[in-house]
Image (tube, rainbow, N blue to C red; front, side, top):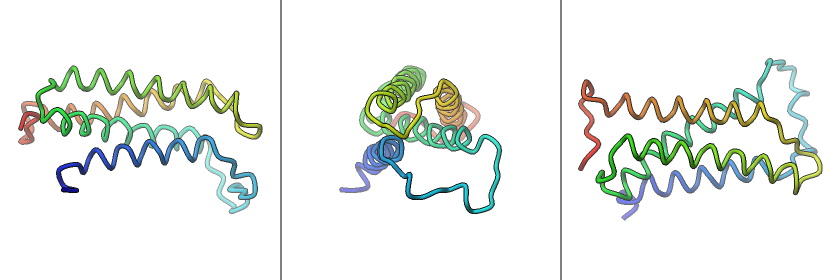
Length: 135
């Protein structure tokens, strides 16, 4: 049963994980004290989170529609969902939290990450690859 809904569970879990990390306060844990000084680490994190969001989102749509929704249509849908979700999270950070900041750079990193993740899925299911989108 879990195998039948594997990507669904992974995608929903990933969305919940991103939501929790984006909206809850971690002010007691100062991540900058560890001696690591990585420029734009927060933007890299946003990029990676939404890269995974885009990949899992496409596989989620494929699983739920049993491959009947075309790859191009599914990838466009997930891209729009990822961008809207990323903007929504930034708006919630601005309105609901006191110690989290909404930044336009985060939206750009989210968008670019989703685009790359979706592009990787589209490449994986391209005609040159052995993977088939339709079941």
